[in-house]
Image 1 (cartoon, rainbow, N blue to C red):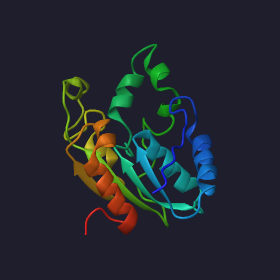
Image 2 (cartoon, rainbow, N blue to C red):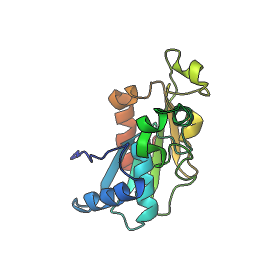
Image 3 (tube, one colour):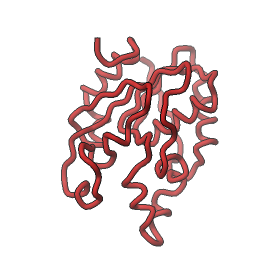
Image 4 (spheres, rainbow, N blue to C red):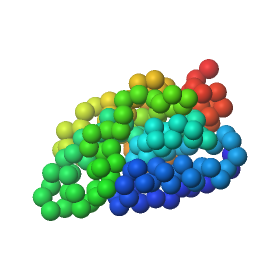
Length: 178
């Protein structure tokens, strides 16, 4: 794979503008373009697929993406004076209510959710189990997507060789397992 990183401001930019920028970014590469997204990045990519059915990319692996919205974000947003400031535009980018409930036409999405939570943050926030400590597994579901759970925490999923192996298989076959 040739790996390139799409940079965007997750708390300042609006989802519609950033998803249009992602669409333009992907056009510069020859097909196929596979998207590997973490957390809010999956909401961004899903929005691109919904806004641009002609997108060059049609296969995505979303890791720890709260497609159904984020309880953690909803609770942070309620903290007077700082909650909305911390999360900024990310609240309007699907973290409060989610970004959709099904995979768009002509698109294949594989979802990897973490189900290993450490520390007391999940208990303090009241995050449903299982979770990765930041996103509940239930928040990651999207109708029509392939879904698996792996024993890791939210950020740890990015550094997991098991996640990379599963993503590689999904990119090649359109599914996580044989």
